Image 1: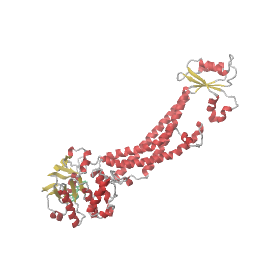
Image 2: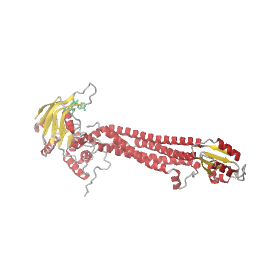
Image 3: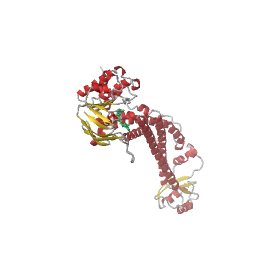
Image 4: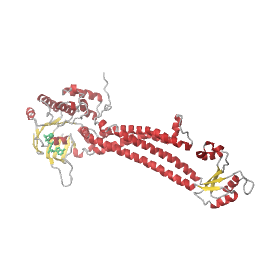
Amino acid sequence: MVRFESVGLRYGRVSGAETAPEVLRDITFALPEGAFRWLLGPSGAGKSSLLKMMYLAVLPTRGHLSILGADIDRTPRKALPRLRRRIGVVFQDFRLLQHLSAFDNVALPLRIAGRPEGQIRADVTELLRWVGLARKLGARPPELSGGEQQRVAIARAVIVRPSLLLADEPTGNLDEPQAERLMQLFQELNRLGTTVIVATHNDTLVARHPGAALRLDHGRLVAHG
Amino acid sequence: MKVPSASLRPAGFDELGLRQALADRMLPLLVAAMAFLAALAAAGWFGTAALARHWQDGAGSALTLQIPNPTGPAERGSRNRLDSALTLLSATAGIASVHSLSDEELGELLRPWLGTSAEHLSVPMPAVVAVHLTSGSMDIGPLNAQLQAAVPGAVLEDHGVWLRRLSALAWSLQACSGLALLLVAAVATAVIAVATRAGLSARREAIEIVHGLGATDSYIAGRFAARATTLAAIGGLIGALLAVPALLTLASVVAPFSGAKALPETVFDVLAALPPGLWMSLLIIPGGAALIGFLTAQGTVRRWLRQLP
Ligand SMILES: Nc1ncnc2c1ncn2[C@@H]1O[C@H](COP(=O)(O)OP(=O)(O)OP(=O)(O)O)[C@@H](O)[C@H]1O
Ligand SMILES: [Mg+2]
């Protein structure tokens, strides 16, 4: 499902003798299909960077990476979009399109995938109702609170029923009951077979939902399990 | 009950925010200016092509012979001066054909100077004989001497050289028009490429988000190309439409020289005022602008997207 073998990552291009430092080093682990993992570690440890490789926004500068059964080294660039459509991502900074309504933001992955518009309308409306935004369908992100934007971002990530769900600090702007509700959604998706990885600093949340964890420190994987 | 629509994306769904990033003022305006210039260059092309053809045809009849008092008696024999000269010419080696211009043809030649009454002038008119040579040129000295002996006062002129020079001039003017047309297309391409690149950097974040959600390069390039094509087509249409009155004015200035009506009265006069090829070009210009917009945006965006994994 997800397999890292001695993966290293450095940002920026290698220019002359000057090379950027590796932000991730010798990462090796494998996750089976349907796994749930916390991704833990201090700020700057490389959690977001690890997730970025998993959702194929950056490619490893070293080692081998395999996502959803596809060996990324040997996958042609034009086959990557099809893989990305099976990965749902909740970004730390939401990354919503500011000029689109909440509805259109959540509908975007389905439209990119070419789903019929009638089905899109029903699915998106239902999901936004479920995250408590039934009355904000037409609101644009700047008109929404941080927590509301985060819920839109979560809805956009799960609308495609992804095989792999990656969440980067998804509860940062949510209150306790909302965070709890979100964890229930993730656990429900996980029970239905989605592989879920949640990066977080929220220790109470982790304590309330104990589970296996990938632990990073200074770019190294220090614990798995 | 609502019937679910099967369309893949709603019309006007602007996920990349291109309505702001590729704004609807500057680009169409610039493309309109290019289209206007393209129309002028096309007019230059067709105008000079007609001239070049005309002069090249003329260059074939390399000599003209003017015979004052053509019906007067010749020096020898019982025939008149014109017949005597024609006989002499047809007996000369190196001459392919000899044609004595009729009164109507003479009137046609003189109309730019004398108007339509040229055919009914009461002044004595010389006979004009167009002589076509078999080869490009000949030494007219001996022929001239023979003519002077038979029909004194005849004037033999070799204007093939001038016609060839004029024709070469017209061809090079036509080449310039073609070059101008190519340059205009190149500048339009550059303008659209610059606008597209500005749009790409303005919407970089949106593109990365859409790319991250699994959009293919063709999807993203298609969004840009659709916008660029529309704007370029609008610009091309405006430019071509603005060129029509300009070209008709130009045509009406030129009209008296070619004998056409200066002021068109009917739709047919308007259509006849410009060569059909030029009308075709005016129709093609908006399509050409749209095509340039489409291809340039596609190429620019696809090249830019290759920096994303
Ligand atoms: N685009 C980038 N270019 C250069 N360096 C980067 C980039 N993104 C992250 N880094 C560096 O990589 C390291 C790891 O950053 P990352 O964002 O992965 O940490 P994190 O564990 O997610 O931290 P946080 O918990 O604060 O979100 C940091 O030192 C950071 O400066
Ligand atoms: Mg982070």
